[in-house]
Picture 1 (tube, each protein chain N blue to C red):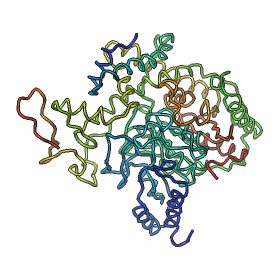
Picture 2 (picture 1 turned 180 degrees about the vertical axis):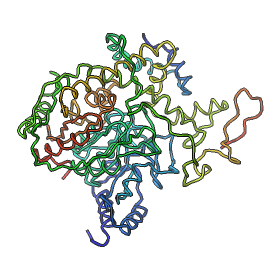
Picture 3 (picture 1 turned 90 degrees about the vertical axis):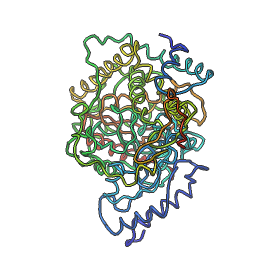
Picture 4 (picture 1 turned 30 degrees about the horizontal axis):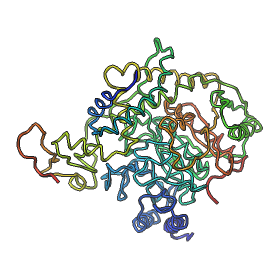
Length: 104
Length: 466
């Protein structure tokens, strides 16, 4: 199951990471190098073995979704890259025809 | 130390030591954030409260654990300038025990690495030999303890990131049972594996730190509601009735004979103290690295999706709308190893490869966990192994990614199984520290600490640079 240039480009797209051509080539080599060592798993008999997703006392329990939020000691505006009127500002979708607003 | 102002005097001494050993960027590069005046204010408050098991003890925290005032950047450009608006539970608990935060420490970016070379701040250096790595990913915390700046430091563990640097720097490093310690405020890497760990200059220092931070936290639903036992022991005691497992897979023929000899000497100490040593097999050990690097990267690809430039940290607007902003931010914000792991994790989760890699790895994880269960069910109290296959290596060795991953070969199994494990110094080879790893059953940290105390007492190996 060798990783191809197309595979790297596909997962980079999924992961929202932009790569130039040279870096794609390097990653093809590196990921194939790593995955070649993973092939040992194919020889392991796991017939009927339950997969382990977590090892805690009770799996991955959810906390009750209630109560006031945990107080923050600084406001969101203090560290958000761009904010206005309690909203995070982001560039417009590129499919949008309006001019991209400068959001710093 | 002045009796009236013990915390202030201890904090002044810690900062003096930072200067003496050149802990900053132009030296060991183990401390990346500190503020003397702020720490002295904390010390003043601690002196006024006068109390707690760690009253006046200065401590350091890895840069991926949230603290007030000092930045929390995970040694990554993508969190450049980020100061957390809340504090991790583990930090709060150490402060409540009277300890005073003096430094945030260098690490591999997002805790991904075994050498501390994958850091936006550059590599930290090993105080024992500054041409060598301190190990990783919590290399800065290990180095800060080894250099005598602090007796206790916090790190984080996903596959050995506390134990391996502890072994490389000659200090004690503990990974508790999964669920023993709150992760509220620990920046997530691989959530089914991550735990906060403790470094100590001695076994008792590490025990004091662990006692302070362990226990249920309502803010982390994976933290276990279990009583926290005392972890400090008299190391001169005997170990009659204790069964120590020696797993043959951790002593392969390829293991450096000097490494083998140091760990065997430690096993002989336990035998002399009355323990019964039993040969055991953890037969799926050879699957640990493939399984670990599939599961950890898969979980990381999900956890690190939150770093998108929208709400905090670094942003590059790019020139192609919202998607362009995401891509520009993430490509420029993350370093090469983090990108490699995100892509590997995305690949093993993607359609067509999920069953062959991710699901298969989860099944093999079950087999690794069963190995430990079988050993403990058959009467073994603790398991002892080398912590690492080699001592600390040179900075800039330029290993291939998979070669670097093999550093975790003896440590990743404990994370996969969720069992507690610790590294304790047992000697040196060519002047470089060697660590032995002690592994116990879930929530049986006390057994592990008892054995570690005996090794420390008998071998006389105390961590750090004199």
